[in-house]
Image (cartoon, rainbow, N blue to C red; front, side):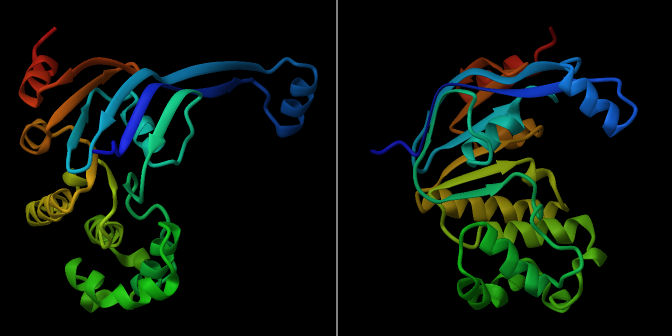
Length: 243
């Protein structure tokens, strides 16, 4: 079976600039005089894993552990600084739901816009507007500018658009903790359907019971490095154990 995601010793460094200039002019002068200090912050360091079609890999760890950075590398948003990240097929990223939305546009127009940003054609998205708005339970608000939407409504809309296709790789970052209980269960059901269709799923969550329930394997990250990978119950128990 072809591996959907293969990460080999991947690392990603953010370049930080430290300067006390009060204005852009002072910053530019300091930059020319090489007085601006640049530092590297390694958000992810030497992480390796593989993910097969139909498999669910959970990622846990404290805030700042590098989880979201890892998701963005898999979603092809950020290239690794070092190492090799191979992702095969169509990717549906649910990292920041609605990040591509235009707040002044209606949900109708945003479905087309967001779907296009995810790689589909405008005509494909126009054909799917009815089904997407129905699943998101937003039929009565489809022509309303989304600036008036609640965070839960935005989450439903973003999730519905991102999962309207059957991707090869599904990247989910904290989406399952958004919205009310009914929406969370509905989202899990749709993800399970995608898994059964053969999608490889990589997801981040701080909800340990969800991680136990949905994952086939779990990675524990801390300060950008892998602490442990393996059976969900074993990894979650080790993570939750007091130091």
